[in-house]
Amino acid sequence: MSALLGIDIGSTNISAVVYDSALRKVIYTRTVSNSSKFETDDDLAEFDAKKIIEISLSLANELTEKIPDIKAIGITGQMHGVVYLSRSGEIVSPLYSWQDKRGNRAFFESKTYCDEIKERTGESVNSGYGFATLFYNKINGIEDKGAYTFCSIADALVMALTKRKTPIIHPSFAASFGLFDVKENCFLKKAVNALELSHLALPEISEDTVAGYFNGIPVSVAIGDNQASFFGSVKDNKGALINFGTGSQISVVTEDFKTAEKGLEVRPYLFGKYLLCGSALCGGKAYAILENFFSEYAKAIGINEKQYETMNALAQKAYEKGEALKVLPLFCGTRENPDLRGSIADISDFNFTPGNLLLGTLYGMVNELKGYFDLMGINAEKLTASGNAVKKNEVLKKVIKDVFSLPLSLTENDEEAASGAAMYAGVAADEKI
Image (cartoon, rainbow, N blue to C red; front, side):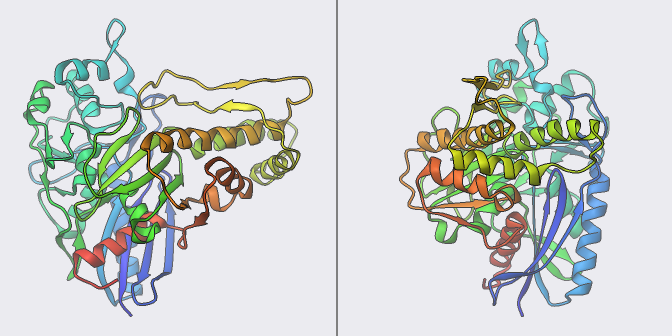
């Protein structure tokens, strides 16, 4: 057996898989809750970074002891978020996650912090991206005095596993901070200096490499969860990948760098290729918000149960009748315009039902990604879907097929990002997969 370990640090869970490269499948999965989020103001998203590392190290120890033939370890996790590190490599801050919205606070009168970044640098950096967070913290005196450099939480885990004192980051994570030249594969140093952040050492960038060793096992440099999911889901890089997690994304691989249409991103992929991506801030979360809505009513009448099963049944009935409300589920706005909000249209006394609302929301979730896909201008022959939100919701699968009019397949593994990280580690460590 040629076993590869992959760990994915998500916003809700931390997952680990052991992937058998000979059988080409996951042979063991372990998922634990990411119970590290701090209670904060609505627009501040902080996690206990040290607790995340402890949980992840525990998983690595557990699985390498359980399956001693592991040949390589790969790490992935949520992108855009940032942690500060001391000169000796110690974590000296919380994890400020991709959900952090303080960049949208007022910097001066009606101008936001993200507006100020654009004015100073000429570059757009969305709230929740590393440099938007670093800039906000610097201006407001929140930065820890011991801060020397920064990295993602996945990079910090690689450092903990390999006992590195300095971070080494893949372009997929470097680009997720903003102020990064994807084509030239480097940070925009003048833009960083314009934000008064020159005192922070920029992390070393390296791709497709081994960062160090954990108990003699090679550990690859961490890769972004978008890239890991694609690598673990789409064979031969053909077709588009649609994913529903807390947010949602649609991605395709391109061989050559191309300037993206407004609303899209060109991200570094693996092995010199690129990902063209469209991302929604509120993907699967939109359906979860409705579940909270129905659960609150259920609790009021003495039912303390999750409502997803009932919701899916109601949505199925509405689908069979061909009835749906027009729902724009922009509960969290968009990356380009976080102030946008959703809407429900064409309501009548006949069609305002829970099922029609649920089905309309599913169509709204998928239509947002279809809009991004149309901007890409790529004729994909097939569509691969990942994420439990798709696998557990038959109506959502039908809606995706209706909206995209493409053959739809589901990913073979439940933990696509962790699987992709494991497979990538095998390549980086020259282990055949």
